[in-house]
Length: 264
Image (cartoon, rainbow, N blue to C red):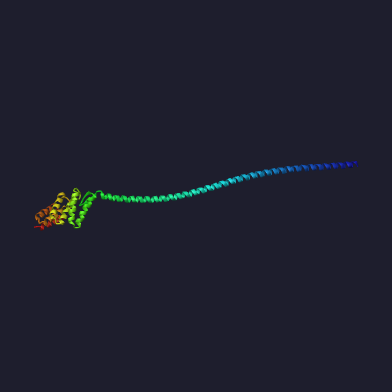
């Protein structure tokens, strides 16, 4: 009986001990769980703070990037405006350059025209080379004009005017290269106005001054004709003889021979 009681007592003690151990183990598990939960909360809080910090950094970086992008856009806009302004200035400069080019071309053309006109005037004022009757010499513009005027009068048959112009030419230009031709044509003009004595004297003066002149044979023939007109047959014979002897190969000499044959 006692043994049974003791056994029961032992079993009860064991049961109570087991319950106490279970309670103690349960108490230990709850403490660990709380600690784990607190640790998780702290970790979560730390992660949340880190996330907030990262978000703040990202927001700040995004704001900076946005500001930089806006500044870049403003710079690009300003550069584009400057580029457009430069293009406008270039277009304006090109227009000015084209205008200046046209004005320069017009100025050069005007200068060329003025230069040509001036050269023409100077040429009219400056002496120039003249080729007449196989001879070359230099004559001034006024001298040339005076001679041409006298020749125009002869060609027009105005012998009185021609004589006056040729005589005036001799007074104004005594040493002219035209002098020999002037004496020859003066004799012809005097012959044309039937001043045979004057014509004879003019032809003789011409021959004395230029015996080798290409018109010398014609002058002798014309002088003989003047003498014939004055009924100076002997004088005409001498003149024609001089012609045939001095210039035998000339056409005037052939005509002179025929004229000699008719003189009595």
